[in-house]
Length: 298
Image (cartoon, rainbow, N blue to C red; front, side, top):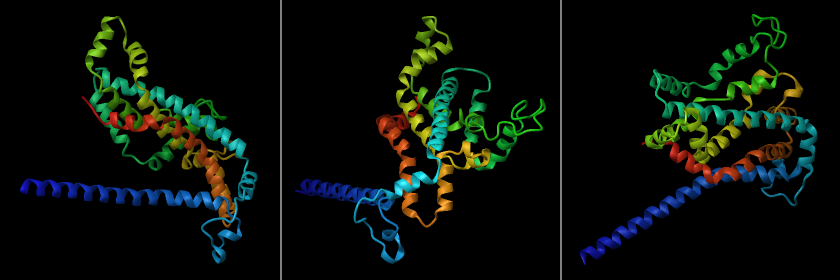
């Protein structure tokens, strides 16, 4: 009888714990989804429906005028083209350089490897905003670029160009760290067998490890795409011309010039976020696996 009571008590405790867990998850889901819901419904409202005097949660009908007006406010085709070009190059470059560096830190033995890795980890703790001035000076002082002389003076260097928005992000400590942790999950015998077959370090990297890196590369693709596409601060500092404007700068310009048209703003927010949603939907099945395996080490 006592055993039966204990079993019922444990079952009741488990049921209560599950119920509390689901309640917390539902609350967290609402916290995340309610703002998204608000953005979507506001984009289809008229100005009258979002006014403080006549505020309504849902529009009477689907009104696409906000999308039309928002599209006409900014040169969005140019902004989308700029952001797409920058994002594609940055993501492709970072996948190569981050995976290559992560492979080197994980599988190769060289002097100072641990010291360099510690320095790399320290770089993850430095806010990007704190190094923007040195990066600005470096980009402005590139020799023989943008009217500069051989000493890097006299012109603008790489400022207001695609290079200034691409080169600093072709690699990063977070990507290298994730790749290093991922490659550390493989046994050393894999490298030894490849070396017996006559493979060098680089051949082992691209013929063995890259084909097995689908999860971590998909994870890096999502993280880097989101970071690059949503980057506002760096393009704001590095560019000045309308021709170099990205979607985030276009969105900020739109917000500054039409602060009362919240439906236009939400419409612009929706179509600038669409590429990120597409990338995530395509790679989501690899995302969790990539993060999980990157946190393990044999």
